[in-house]
Image (tube, rainbow, N blue to C red; front, side, top):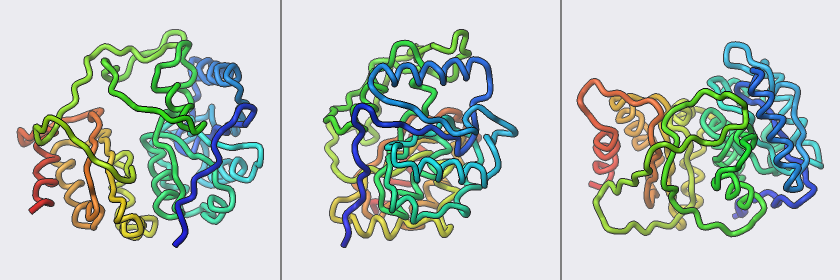
Amino acid sequence: MKDMIYPSLLKKGDTIGVTACSDGKPDVLDAVRLDHAKVQLDKVGYKVLETKNTRVSFKSRSSSAMERKEQLEELLENDEVKAIIMVSGGDYLLEMLPLLDYDKFVKNPKWLQGYSDPTGLLYTVTVGCDIATVYGCNFSDFGMEEWHHSLENNLKLLQGEGIQQESFDFYMDGFKKKVTGYEGYDSDKEVCWRNARDEDEILIEGRFLGGCLDVLLNLVGTKYDKTTQFIEKYKEDGIVWYLESFSRESEELFTGLWNLREAGWFQYAKGFVFGRPCFFETHTDTTYEEAILSVLRSEER
């Protein structure tokens, strides 16, 4: 049995590719931020290569599905590029999936990174090609003037430096309008970890797998869903699921998790880490925690 593919770690002087597999960043302040991200990475020893579609947006798409596919594969086949970071999230990355040549990911393994809509690419490559990917910052985050500690950790991870991720004291609640383009996170609310079972301590170990729940629910049951084969291969390690919901109401959250459970995704789960939902509502007076636990606790029976 072949081991999981881990792309080569970044080293100073390497090139980081940036592309828009989902939406692009077309606004003036977006351009300021992207340019500054390149400056910031240059300061720490990295070159940046952008594809043509990173600063374009039309109906939440940077370009056609074929153009996005071609520009991603240009970076994959460029020997100078050692990591590829998505410029942004969006809604329509899934359009690319039928067009991609997945053998190219195996022949040219590189770190793929992004979050939200890029889940569609990262998750498909991980479970389908058995290649490790990074669910982390999109490229524009590197444009802040003073990097948040999470960005420093992100780069250390790609460089192979051991990190111990600890909870931050505060987080930014919602989206804040940019004025200069150089803004950091406006961390205005205190972080609150909630242990669903009220234990004093949780100790779990396994392979991290997951992403944006809204996107994963579009993948389940399709030909890109190789989840059961992947978790069967790594059942001795077990899976720690990380999941975050963008715009699922409590009722949709329940039915979505039920769908994944019944599809066999959680068979070898060792534990779950849920992020804060971005937009959350309920029509049945069901809290976020109740929606989650009503599905996962029934899995234990």
